[in-house]
Image 1 (cartoon, one colour):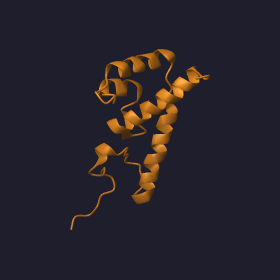
Image 2: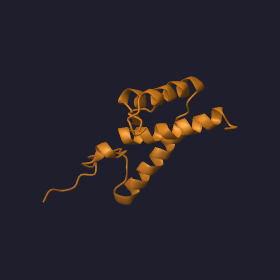
Image 3: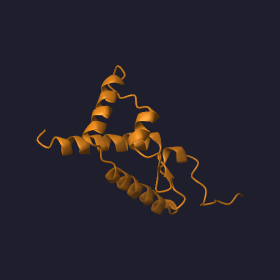
Length: 111
């Protein structure tokens, strides 16, 4: 039987926000949740950046209105690596969506 090495990323690490410093089991899950919160807090968009992203959204939607994010736009505003963890596209999408909302209401507080 092969032993489990905790210094190796989980096999589905492309879907997780995994770092070698994460604890095992539930602690590792909480480490990833906390890291994602810190990443969300670290992203703030200025008016020019928000304008750039809103233009991208307006020009890159499918028939259902879903935004067709590209790695170029996602990782222009969200770091591809944060606190030793590779940021998956799904996480970058979520973090950027949060940053858009946060920045929009910060720039236009009366809306």
